[in-house]
Amino acid sequence: MSKVTVIGSGNVGTAVATVAAKGGAHVQILGRDHEKASALASQVGGTAGAVGDPITGDIVVLAVPYTALAELAESYGAQFDGKVLVDVTNPVDGATFDGLTVPADSSAAAELQALVPGAKVLKAFNTNFAGTLASGQVGDVPTTVLVAGDDADAKQALVDVVKAGGVEAAAIGSLKRARELEAFAFLQMTLAVQEVVGWGGGFALRK
Image 1 (cartoon, rainbow, N blue to C red):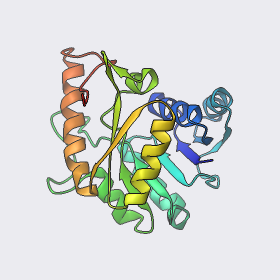
Image 2 (image 1 turned 45 degrees about the vertical axis):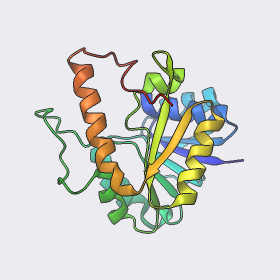
Image 3 (image 1 turned 135 degrees about the horizontal axis):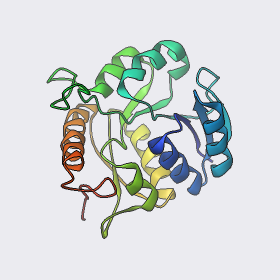
Image 4 (image 1 turned 180 degrees about the vertical axis):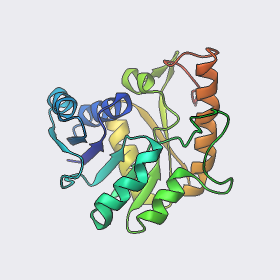
């Protein structure tokens, strides 16, 4: 049985935890709001705790804002070593909503990997709105989670968990591809803000 820890109990954390649990994974929820974390854990048949508690999962999904990544990396440090660490964030400039805040040759995931070199960092879920993860559909097309990372086994482990939960997933290349995933997600978000697409829609991968 796969063991998945989700840090964060917001919309994305809820959707990821639900998919993982549906596929048979044991899910641990760690959150700053204990009531929300406990409610989500009860919903998915998992366990709950506070951010800072020991991690039980082999796969750790950071379902938090981009600005929280550095704090979590500092807080957990070597506890992330050997873990499959999944960054779902999009480093969007919240003041202007007119670009990404990371350098043009970098990404949030690359920054995270530099902070926790012992972890196997993946970029995933950031191009999926939470509603499409929950429903498994983008319009009439199955939702696909795109996964980037440098460790092939880590990518396959996450792809297996997602597919077991009834959602399509595809490994798309090295962690360098996180930059394109973040730019892609930013474009999708700007379209949603302008109401060109709905938050339950977006781009889809038709095979």
